[in-house]
Image 1 (cartoon, helix red, strand yellow):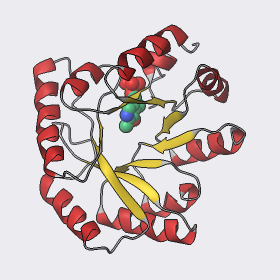
Image 2 (cartoon, rainbow, N blue to C red):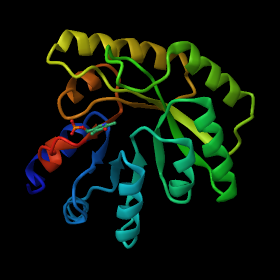
Image 3 (cartoon, rainbow, N blue to C red):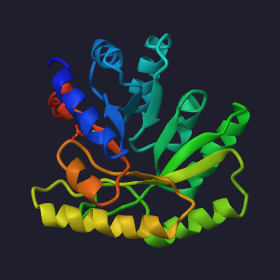
Image 4 (cartoon, helix red, strand yellow):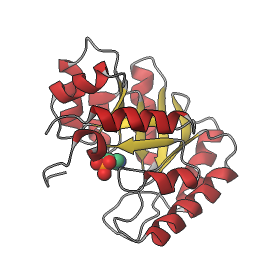
Length: 219
Ligand SMILES: *Cc1c(COP(=O)(O)O)cnc(C)c1O
């Protein structure tokens, strides 16, 4: 399926007025699709499998794409993306953050990160609870992770048509986010729920199918 440039232009316009950043989630999509959206103006792309991200990064090195990692990241795979990743959105443990810090240092750079918070009613989703979040931010504020910047929070709402449920989840997260005044990014909202996310404080949305068409089931 082709990239929907019409949807892209409408979305860019809609988000611009609200100061919301767009990350185009290109998982399972081809390099050709990515380049098409790049040529329409998009620079931030998100992937959720390390191997796929590395392959796309290598193939598209000529383009000044900012690569976001949005999937579950295993500690032993951090080294594969540490050299080039723009924002790791899915940090869900202190152990993972420590590994990112270590490899960022080794690559002589600082890596921007978001902490992924668990807000849904689905056990399949990853993320921290409020206490774990506090523990990690305390550790960071203590100065023990000099090569990472914690920029904000990321979360995924339940996969449901129940708008009230989604709103409740995003609203709860926004409350938590506001407690940490040093944070500046709240990454919530996908194709189905981005409007509700923005009404509840999101300033970064991660959109796949609305731009690239539906994915085959795998992802
Ligand atoms: C796939 C994915 C998205 C985009 O989902 P769509 O419903 O296609 O917009 C956003 N965030 C994460 C973490 C994803 O894995």
